[in-house]
Picture 1 (cartoon, rainbow, N blue to C red):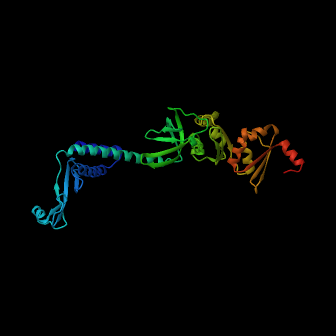
Picture 2 (cartoon, rainbow, N blue to C red; picture 1 turned 90 degrees about the vertical axis):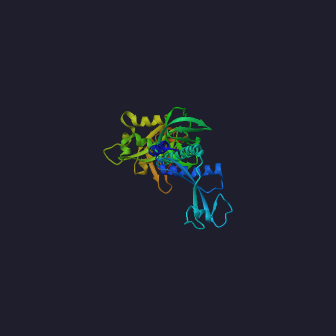
Picture 3 (spheres, one colour; picture 1 turned 120 degrees about the vertical axis):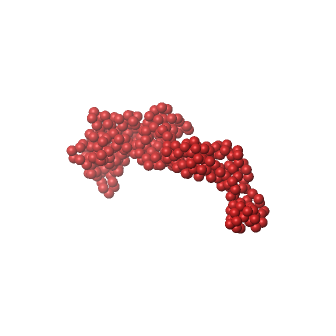
Amino acid sequence: MNAEFMAALSQIEREKGISKEVLLQAIEAALISAYRRNFGSSQNVRVQIHRTQGDIHVYARRTVVDKVTDMRTEISLDEARAINPTYSIGDEVEFEVTPKEFGRIAAQTAKQVVVQRIREAERGIIYEEFSNREGDVVTGVVHRTEHRNIYIDLGRTEAILTPAEQAPGEVLRPGERVKTYVIEVKKTTKGPSILVSRTHPGLLKRLFELEVPEIHDGIVEIKGIAREAGSRSKVSVHSRDPNVDAVGACVGPKGLRVQTIVNELRGEKLDIIKWDPDPATLVANSLSPAKVVSVVIEETERVARVVVPDFQLSLAIGKEGQNARLAAKLTGWKIDIRSESQAKKAEDSGEV
């Protein structure tokens, strides 16, 4: 160890944010173990590194006793008082025992300790950075696929996209840039484990916040999201400013804003509907793109009975019931959809 090494520790302190004193204390503790491993495990020693020059000194500690039984750890009262007349039974006497060849061992040990502490510090910094980003969107590059897990390179670390959080039918190839939603950050012995999602409704919400300034500024509010990732989503929005059209703000000039989000979600269809405090109007809006003739709300059963034109029945229900299912999820109401002819037939026969 020398002045150059101390200068290197100072540089690490500046660049990595690890206190030089913390590193030196760790190196001293590691050198004690190294000394005992090489020169006798039973010895009681203290290692001191000069804080400016970097010189190393090893001191053996011996306890003053009346009768010596172990010369490596004990010293007689007469011998101790020959060194200093003030010593008494139970005191500790220190002798410098720095070996000539200890420099090489010290350098190797110091390197290992510094590398380990740097890794620990960097893991801690990365964990703190990403633990604060739970519920946020991060952009990364697809790195590799292992056991159906996709690993996303975030620069200083990797995120894991598990099969359950991958959008059905979406193929992510190595080298592609992709946005993901951070759902959980866990601290592990190998560093932070960052779990991300491409299916979470929060991803859609954050994408709208990034693309629509009115949402970011709080003028337009996202009231609800119903999502079937990779296929279709419905988003209800409300404007706090009567002069701002919530749906128009989300769609953007010539549809550019919503198209950017659709492109990021690899073609997932988006229905943006106007939120309304009236349940009947909200249900009617939520069934877009279908047109609704009437909506009857039954509060007790939380059922919305909807009538649509005959030619729009299949559109209102959607492929495999998807449109109606998403509308029900978005509004919180069970939706019963009938065509006009079905409603008239039920009315004529006295059915509800």
